[in-house]
Image 1 (cartoon, one colour):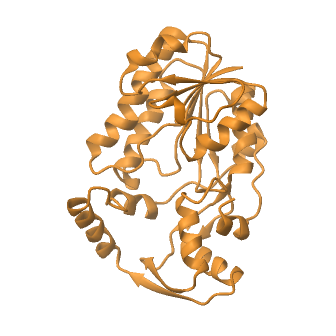
Image 2 (cartoon, rainbow, N blue to C red):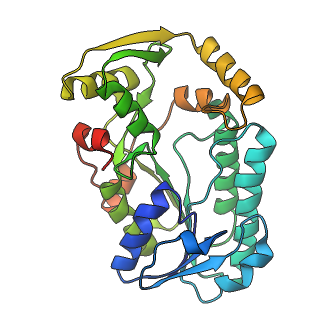
Length: 293
């Protein structure tokens, strides 16, 4: 297949692009700096920007699928999330309708969907609705917290902190639930979503076994032979710290929206993905989480 990819340089993209090429697909990857993309047979970089549809629209012609990985995940305001997730998706869908109307559109979303999950979650809910009403053959994928893609993902950061032992700040009491999934289990599901007839018009949760934040921290510490002292931090204090960081730091480590995103209830039911995409997540691999692979 000829596949047009956005977000090829992100965490998921760096793992998915080589897998797609290895499966025999030909990729066009939209990037502001194509030189930063890996050199792979079957991968062509396209210099462009999702914020400027004129830089990529005509290049969509001739593609069999569009894999929309790009998203704005950390922003200070709702308007920035809207521009980066809703408006960009609307522009891409319009360009697809004009240049590759029969291409399957794979929208990579999140389990943190809706206003209860903060401004990011609301922007992703609106983007999903645009996809559903686009008239294109579409598939929506909602991966959980991904590990095995390198040390930059949030679950890897948590694992590294727990592996050292000692004191660990715990938002609330760490009761919020994660569902970590290994990238090696996501890739086959993504590949299946490109071609499975039953997938069109489906919204799929791709999640591992649910585990509370505090339980995951304890599991990592035990695996590494460390003692962990969990220090509950009131959620109001976490939110206040995030707001202050946004005011005084150019690149804050956390934005207020992330607190709601972390704590909101999220779907963990991957039954449909198991049925239609052959999704088969492994049991939690703490060692891989610590190693970042």
